[in-house]
Image (cartoon, rainbow, N blue to C red):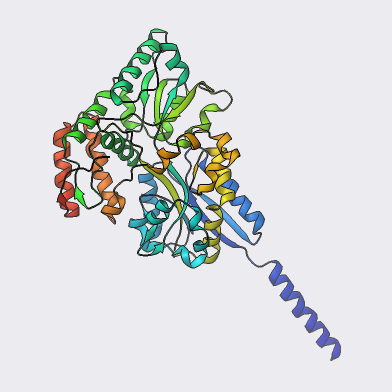
Length: 430
């Protein structure tokens, strides 16, 4: 009897031990981006987290490059209340539209971290007092320029769109005369997607044409300065930009630029280190500056950036929230800043020597990032995605010569009134 009792106790102890050793890991999935070095750096940071948390397995889901396509994929998961994705990398324009699907990160320790981040982004991600996304990296549109070609042809970095067009055309003609028939003055994001909204907002706002819908919920897009700016961009197509610019996104523009076939490029900071890799045709030949100014006299850079939100349908909400806060913390943000030129949202990292050595423009263009122009996502929530789609489709119709700018903008105004029910107003000057 005693032997049986001992055996029973031993068996019980073995089961307890084996249960703790072989218990299943908590498994979570982050839906991240793959533009530039995003995917590799997300995987590297996930590995760092798993090394610190051996009881957690993190999967990284590759998602489409285009923000519009990525949002469509996210909505498939979220509207189905699917637990398959725990953490979402969300665009700065989405918190208002998607807030109902995300946890309040203030309930998971974010209160101890938010003061370290840019407060404007924290406020952007706060909906009805709930922090629905943690700031991860911020962005603003920049002008990439070939310093060697400016020196060769005797030009300075252009300060206005008029100077820019003349400079781009002169360099394009010079390089083609030298034998490169594939060379163009300017590549940018002209495809019909969110990237075109960003580009168009920059040249419209810098020209005094406003922000489509004003912060006080007035529809302002139908004005002479906006129409003038869209006409200007339409003239670039086939002139200083390739005819196919109307199909270019960030990565396709970057490939033309890095092949040495453009004098200027509009893109986000992530492209900065990629042109300096071994074998690049432009290694050591370029730099970045603020985008040119229009009639307002001021440059405009669209506020971009991405944040981390935790799905309320996650089967492991505590683990997912802890992972999101780790990814948004200083260790990972510094890694991404140094290796990928992803702008931190943690203020102190802009004084970090290693960060500034890797991306010197983080210091010199600091004001560009902190004063970037926001898209009207707050004023139009929860219908911003529809507003942006109407806007970029209207601009794209002008770029492709399907419609005159004035007509396209008049139709856009009518569509926005029907969609939002807002009054028509005058654009605010920058």
